[in-house]
Every structure is written in structure tokens, then in C-alpha cells.
Image (cartoon, rainbow, N blue to C red; front, side, top):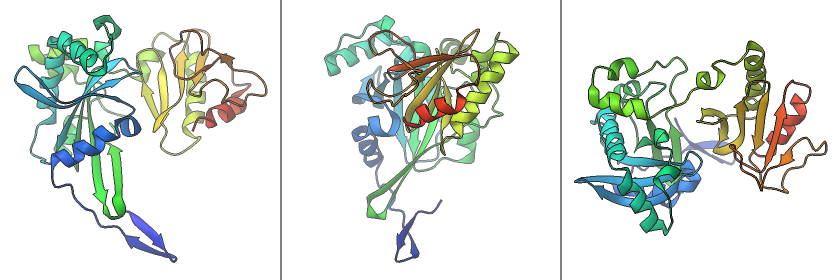
Length: 300
């Protein structure tokens, strides 16, 4: 992919300025972790059991630890290394809790963490087709992110998305006891996990709203979580929980920031709720579809 600078009606190709060291990539991410990935930095160069984790992060939305590794070399098996780190975390949960509390002066408890949402992220200037294929499973807790640097201090960051036809990795890991132990505890959620045992009418209702949200802007991702399905463009804009008789919506805006003339959304800023943001509503039909889209668009 080329980047261009528009000058005097002409396009100038911006030259790539490759990172010289892994440390340079690490510095970009750790200094901007909230902006790039929506994560909280816990520790840089975290050592445990004779292994070093480049970046230990925490996802407040998923309530899970995230391990980030930076690679300039393409000659690595991201799957083998990823499972090694996942296993390391699951076998040493207390050490991660202690590091979080000591570094951030917090009081996180083991029960506060959703260990099933743990994942490993590899960041590199590029990945081979073999690496992309090896991680193209819908339920593998390994992500690939590509980063490039260009002249004029421009940085591009791109998460490698899994294909919609990606299969499950469980048939492969079932023959390996160590890998199966990881996949049995870690859960990567899909839309099917949320639609199972729901009526055709409710599923169809969800699909109508899902498609309408995705069409609000380019690059809106559908990201199933444990308790809801998130819709992201850089960060969460809205969340949906599929229920037996309808859909529960949350719009990711703070109290007082949503213009809602019909007062369709209720204020949940002072009560517990699954989704992000201070606004919630339950819908059972498409009567207010266009109006709800106008509300969600305010969060983009």
C-alpha cells in the first residue's frame, strides 16, 4: 500500500523509513498504547520464569491481560511462540496480578480478571503469508498487527483480519495436550456464540441492526466479546447484547454528550451494565432503526 502527499494538485509518494530496531517499534506502541489498541500499559520488559515479555498490557473492557511482542524478523513461528506465552500466563496468574498491582498501585484481584479473554499480539513491519495463514482461525487468541513508518513522521498501523470463513483451531490442538489445555481455558468469541439458541426473528433483527451500524462509516469492525458484541472504529462506538426477546444497545458516549430528542436511551451512568458508554436502550423491532443510527453516529 502506497501513501501519498497531496501537493499543488499532484500526488507525491511518501517513502517508507523502516524501523532499524524492534525497540523503536516498541517505543511507538508503548507511548501510544491507548490510542492504537485501547489498552493500558502495565509493564515494559516484564520478566517471568526466565522469559521476557516485551510489553504487558491490560484490556479494561475485556478485563484481561494482553501480551505484546515486537518482531522485525519474519522467520518466527507466531503460533508456537503465542501458545508458549498464553500457557505461561495461565500457569502463573498470580505473578501477573502482583505486577499489575505493584506497578500501577492498584488492588486488582484474580477474580477481577477474565482469563478466558487473554491474548497475544505480535507487531511487525510485515508478516509472511505462512504466518497469516497459521493464525487464520476464528478461535485462536493470537493477533497480528503490521506497522510501517514513512517520511514526514507518518505511521500506519493495520491489524491483520481473519477471513470470514476461518475455521476452528480446536481439531488441530486436540492431539496436543499442552495446546488443548490453553484452548480449553481461553475463549475467542464469535457472533455464533451470541446467536445460539436465539429465535430466527431475533437473529434477523440483530443482523438488520448490525448491517446498519457497519454501513455508518468505513472500517467499522464487529468484535464479539463475552457479554456483548462490540462495534469498533478505532474504539467502541456501540455494543449489542442479543437477548431472548430483543436487543439491548449501549452507545459509547459519556452522560450529557448524546443528543436524543426522543429520549429513547436511558442514563445508566450510575448503575452497572455490560456495554461501554452511559446510554442504554432495548429494541424489539426496526421502528426506530434510522433514529438509533443517528444516535450511534454521534459516537463515531
